[in-house]
Length: 504
Image 1 (spheres, helix red, strand yellow):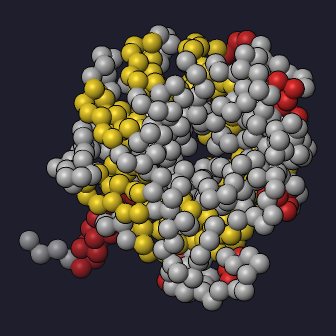
Image 2 (cartoon, rainbow, N blue to C red; image 1 turned 180 degrees about the vertical axis):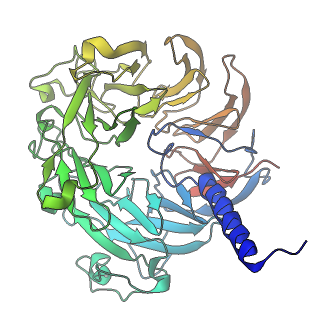
């Protein structure tokens, strides 16, 4: 049969759209599921086990810096992962820098890198030495959004300088050189489109390291500010600075911020990233603050920025994760391992119109207890007493984001345990113990649960109510980033190396 030119063209367009829709769906352009932040992936064909020594199920592995805390994201044939510069990929950059690598998805080769000098004379340790860029990137279209080690929100061109220096930002040479003589740009450098400095613009004082996985919603970016305590952990440096802000994604202009007086009760810092909750009538931004309270804010409409004024985010509800904890002079409890305020490190997760949140005492200075809770955000004002579905006590501090799948919730604690819990009732199903502290979040994918510890132990279990251990693998390196899957590949970020894994 002969197909007319016009009809053939239409078929070609339809095929192109279908193919590209499928291809984009297989990418993983942000940390966790889009909007809901659930640590679940639809990918299949992932390995039950792997062995770097024999190359079993190892597609490739490539070196990073010497400290890598970031979880990678994958989009449009590229991998973006934060690290430091202790193993320089470019001889022009020697010394302590934060680095975001853009790698080829096919073989891990370096396409370009964005480097940022450390904060000069950082005696307050807002930018901890040799830590690098700890935040995961997020990609939309041809733009990459990242919070760098200097606590600046940066919009980058996905192609770096390979297609020239696109504006309106043209000062990359000075930005990447700091106090040194400016370096000339090369094709393997990053291309900054715009930059927003949280310290310079809002007086935010990050603590230890800036960390945020930016949430994209409509025309806006929702960003946690990493506002935290002083170097000695005695008080908030700027308790009036916001904890959650909104930027216009096309320009980086500040559009809105919270006005909830969160600062005085931040136990250590603000490291949890925002989530989107969608109901039948509206959309809410769910934000777990450094004061141990989870907030629901009304999502901004598309014309919010029309008048040019900075808006206050409209609070819909708040849920106090730890209502019996101290609420006044909370920093006087520093070092108290029995009584203290709570902090939240992982992201709130939305699943079946419920919110799941893990919280507890500060890992370094607070009580040793932690919990995961499920609550229903259907209400207004303070819903602490009315919204709780269940609470499950963990064994030690919790640093991770839960994964909710097929009626089960998976969460870790820093005692090295992975907990499997009935997500409807909060009843524990089983516990698996790894070697070492766990900071990474569990990933559910391909009928399996993947988890990794700081001692380099990776465990693979069946995602099931009955505990079945499929394998345990010992890597020669610490692991802090969470496992992530995209396009049939499982990625594990160790401190010094990124592994791309595929079932043989």
